[in-house]
Length: 129
Image (cartoon, rainbow, N blue to C red; front, side, top):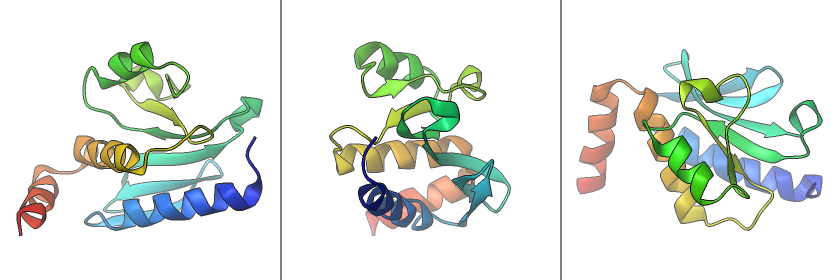
């Protein structure tokens, strides 16, 4: 397990990524920082040693087929999380070397998988400006 100060820095950077997305809020859910769209639909959770699994990771929504593809390609970093894995959610380890560009893409994909189409469109429009 990585030291708490480093976990806190990573969580804070993730928080900035998530809260920069339109109409996103954060609150604890099942004891974990969780990010919601319009306060209702979760798209990402940050978990530390969930039920003693030894991981510092995110669980997040993922587009169809992405979970299997990433877990098959790199099972050291990606995994099928309990409880939500059957819905296609993806687990991503934060206690490995991080590529923040890759992680930002995973966060945006999770958001886009859950957000209403109009919010996703506003994201694309903002990127074009």
